[in-house]
Amino acid sequence: MDIRLATLDDIEPICKLYNEFFAYNADLQPAYYKAEKESGEYPRGTITGEKSDIFLAIEKDTVVGLVHIREAQTPPYNAFVPHNYAEIVDFITTEKYRKKGIGAKLMDAAKQWAKMRNLDYIELFVLSNAKDGFHFYERKDFVVTSHTMRCPL
Image (cartoon, rainbow, N blue to C red; front, side, top):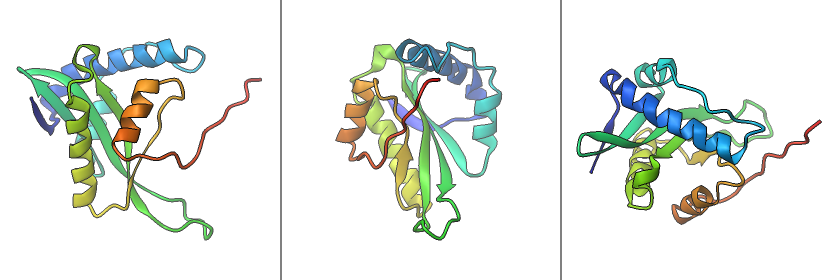
């Protein structure tokens, strides 16, 4: 299994992974997510952007996982300690390949990417009922620093 940066030639398999990811999120929280089809526009912009990348996990010429990471900054308010950090926007391993160490290798690539850019930390968002994901991130040294709460009206 190899980890490498995505290229524009990878758009089709990336879209396939995103479609699986969208369906997974829709199953977990149907009030907020729906199983849509990725057109390719979003990953294309990420791949060509200067402050973001997609790393792919490749098993026997098949894309089986990805991590989308980008640079971010804390808001410009005096009350915040200023930080440049990495944000994991999407983290996906196809269901058939979960719990085989692929996520760990993708996370290692994301951490190395952030270190090479001299960023202060990595931040991510995880759905509250994505228990496997939450436990994975804890094992990779992520800690909860805040909670997002919603009040349906």
